[in-house]
Image (cartoon, rainbow, N blue to C red; front, top):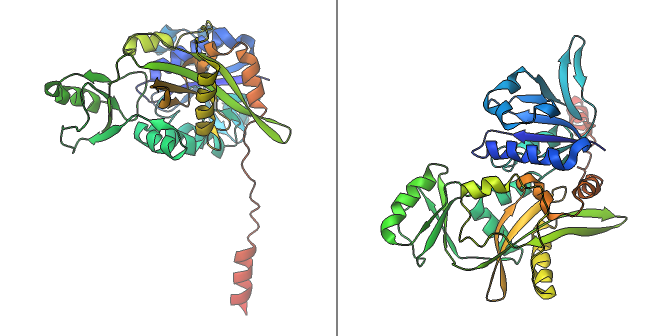
Length: 350
């Protein structure tokens, strides 16, 4: 089985998606059939594997590549005799942020009946907006930290105690994120976040809190379903990873060490992951970032398209993708037969 890596997109995380695709090239090698780049004008380009270097995109050289188009069941390119389809492959949605994680790409791929690994529309909506993610998690019985949602029309006042952390509601990679220790600095931090989004999620900043990352997916095994989990990672001890550190994090390919935690805590994290994934994220490999405070597990965020697909958390990432590709959800077919219109026409004909 071959995979087509779809990356780029019109997003503040466009460059990070390129870095992820380059990292995935090192991991998957010959398992990749095509690299498909979505540029800032929403045009798809077929990128040769040997051109998968960052400067190739910063210099605009990709525009010399073959432009391709969505076609029923697969991508296609123009030829003298019409459209010529590319060899079929399972698409890996590796577009971070808008286009890839907001449901746009999932909707397009489903509309054209192209098999893909990634979040479907409903899952994207729930995980792309951090405020909606909290509502979703709480409805699934997963705890979240207290928060407030601020808009441009909101008064720059908060009932939450300082220090606070401000996050654009629909962005990742620590872009536009600030920690505020005093009320006098709140308005500046809000202005920074509003440069990227019209809504801001405001939370208490918990110093020294334990954080753990867990990736996984679900497969069908006969009539049963099973979860496949990665190792659990305890990320850097820095108080908050800034954009530069997150950016470098997206290029990771070497497997990390498993967190030194108890079996009981490991089971708690997996149970919370399953509550979030079940009947929502089927077909996607996601990463959930959790906080642990006073022996309680809290969701920090859901990454529906994690950096470099969280390959570094799996001992055999190629096997994981092949296994997931065999368990992609299928939409129910609908038989359009126009019987109701014919019945109405028959009645009116009398």
